[in-house]
Image (cartoon, rainbow, N blue to C red; front, side, top):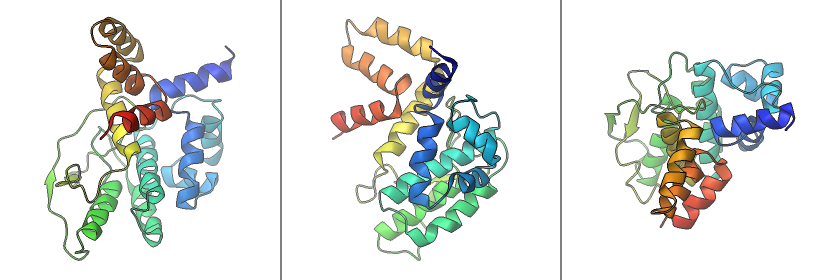
Length: 226
């Protein structure tokens, strides 16, 4: 395996997809060029280019990681038509402003966007959605969802409201983040091998969300989610 292929595989193990795939997926629905995406997440354009081409493997700054994850979730909302195009620039400004340590819950920017979506779905856009503090959800996947900001909150009912379901990719990435926080790729593979005989479905789940590509995890989710 040459170095680029090795780097791409490492990115898949870390993020569920290569950073090139991330950039190419999120930029168009948000109306961003690669250079503009770099500016939003707080990287130089050459550095983002090196990451997307797998000349470099990993994003070292956790605040950049959080912003990229937030941009990814915002793109998912845009693709699903669950955020107005006119609202995207303001959400990108919020993401750009996110700084500080990240742990693993959700960025304030994406929380705000999701809250807005829920208000619209309820037919009462002027009424703030009720929110309650959510404890940090740890993650190992460097594209983490999050900020330690004290006002970060998860809108009440966001998982339960059938009128405003989260996009499948958002749910899948949360599952990936959780698994990759509690175990390394090698540990997940060993656990899957141990479970394969008695519980092949559990083994498939561990491999799909713990070590595979995001596209494979999405396929698994869509096959089994009802």
